[in-house]
Image (cartoon, rainbow, N blue to C red; front, side):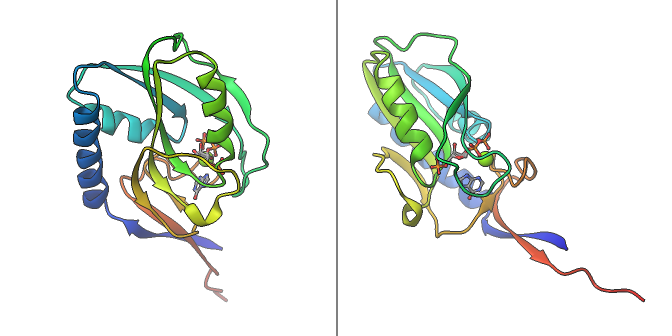
Length: 180
Ligand SMILES: O=P(O)(O)OC[C@H]1O[C@H](OP(=O)(O)OP(=O)(O)O)[C@H](O)[C@@H]1O
Ligand code: HPA
Ligand SMILES: [Mg+2]
């Protein structure tokens, strides 16, 4: 089997939308400092691009939770692999994710972060696959709603590969040509 990636959202389309969302966040948080919480690894590319486009003061922190392993669907088990360095008490926290799929990861995470006493807690995602939702999650900022296809690029992986693609694509599998 060989793989190729079909483009779903071009680099230009993604960049343009991140700029728009960055401007919207800058307006909504005017006069405040926004504390971005990146969910590793998937959220890292989006978080960096988004942070560059926010014009109010920004601070950053990172956490890592694991729910998928090398599978293409959620196991439903969410495990904290790396916790945040800083407390969230009285901060205006914006969680930054690459994708909301079943909603299991974020519903678990938001509940846990809310217990830490942030002044406000909002969620921003690059991609949302509403058809796949199993657990309800309120998303404050969504760049793109996409159909139920397994996507890669801009931080999203297939078995840890393709995160570095500067666009969103779909991996297509093809049979190798048989050479005799
Ligand atoms: O809505 P859900 O069904 O819970 O799926 C979304 C989560 O799954 C992926 O992370 P993954 O656990 O694969 O880790 P990664 O970010 O390191 O790739 C993705 O980055 C989201 O965090
Ligand atoms: O479509 C996806 N691609 C990569 N990782 C994911 N995690 C949940 N959904 C996806
Ligand atoms: Mg992943």
